[in-house]
Image 1 (cartoon, rainbow, N blue to C red):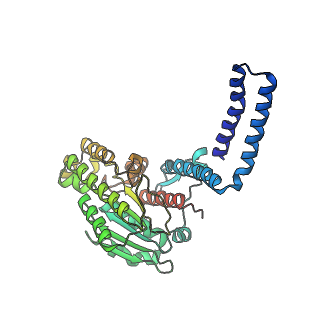
Image 2 (cartoon, rainbow, N blue to C red):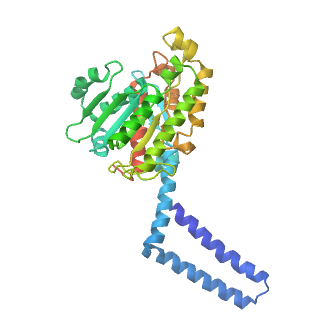
Image 3 (cartoon, helix red, strand yellow):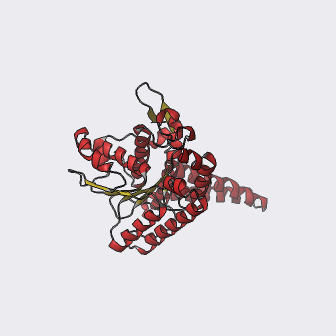
Length: 349
């Protein structure tokens, strides 16, 4: 709709200003009027015939869809938190632009339909493991969750499950350092098998054990370069020329980066964490993430799941140790991801 309005305004400007320019060349009034009428009729016919020419119609519709998609993607984290006595709750803001995007909290059935037959890989640290838990809580029943919870939370271990009925395969890969994530990409390349959805997260372990933002930034650049090369050379994935788009049902991966949470230094449970993971260090690590060009907003392949923003919105009431947050915050990140998948695969449930 917005593209059609723009096209109409452009046509109106042509009809108005071209004759005015001709009048400035001292043409007779009759000639100017004749040209104005002919121009108006030509443009009107062109507007009406455009739908019958697929190439033109597709170009206009693609531009409008792309514009709307990018606009909605940028609004996904417009979330407000409600303080409840039992547990925090969240919702998307009720502003007109957000409402127009039609974001929705998916139930088990809709989430299962969206991810039906997909291979989802979530790789990273404890934050990625908690995101995995929230995703499984959405697609599994309470009884099924009781059976998988202990296996999922075996310390520093991988986890794999295939969901009965939908064929969705989910892999959690313990990969606390960015170098571990790069190794995973190398394994994908060697095997020739690539997930439909790939979520990666890293930073907290490096901050605690190395406390070197420059080294962290360098490793992020290597990860970005590895992903770009992977997308360029793999015929199943197409070429990388900016944002990665596609559908969950095809072999073009949807790439997400789970950002680090807001760290509340006074609540961190060891003196080492309080010393090494202070606000100055956190800001330095965040800055290196953006400088690495890893994120789509900076020209990279990964769409940011802004867990820092989500955890900040929920606040101190949602964490016990200043680092890991209540389930509701990870649930919000899951729904942001699923709505991004809906937008990029042009689906509505």
